[in-house]
Image (tube, rainbow, N blue to C red; front, side, top):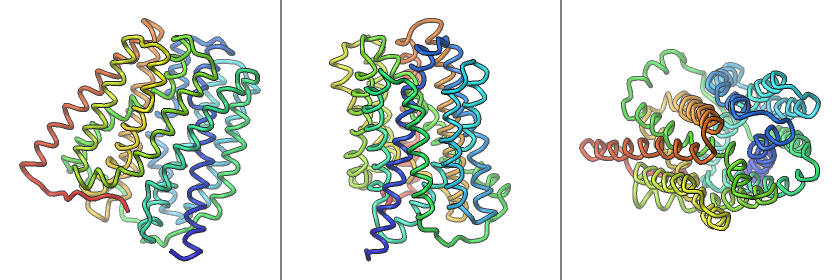
Length: 393
């Protein structure tokens, strides 16, 4: 790579670092803040925390369409990143359940554009210059883990710091977004025809269901893990420490994911990641000690660090080239958004009616179904092999 390419890669890495630092400041600690500082119950917390995934289902495709039609992804990314951080400050100034719902909706509308637009830009650019996408995306995990660790300590004395950090780091990310390299795009095809074609792809639809069942609980865990640590006797600092271990452990697995995918296969890696998640949720159901929770937090890195690149590459491989962008957008909106909402919302009901441990039993049940479906899809692939063991470069 030449110097310009290296600078552009650093810009992308910095963007992911700042964005996920902002997300790490607010996402894992918001549920604890709403419970301890604002006194909301499980139903209310579950509803607020599930608003984001619901909004994502509808607005991620919309932002993708706007980005294609205007051919201005950098501008969209810059504006939405800044506005998401700005509206996050609303949690500081208002103290009513319905106002919190409104704030959550406004934050989610603009936040829903950040990941799919930046992922699209990053994948296109890293493919163009022959750089490993995982080495860019892992800076997001790094930022998230550091943020939770630092804010876990700071927020014990200054709870509102999570919202100020969210705003500051998303503002920094918005400034960096202006410098992200813009790739040339082809005129957008008819969206409706693309969606219709995708809905005829059996493997794609099955993998969406797998993502819903396996990845959804992993995302929802960001909401309930803090409450779980607190119930086991942990403090805000303990929550931050646990998240630091869990999220930073994603980094090395993202770096080696390509080699494992080439050696074992995409679906095999996804199945392994799902099985590891299943083990984690079952362990949490049996109320382990804090020491065991901290010691096994690395499981998150194994599961997400492998599932994220494997899942994205599988979607790219099973869809025709001309509808890959649409396929990835729907994958993010339905697979991740709907799965996250379902797991978060019903998790809130289980938390209120039973306990935080029942939430993880629910997660385990979903993951078990996802793993079984994944194994079935692997058998289908063996009968009609059509994919090579490829990896994102």
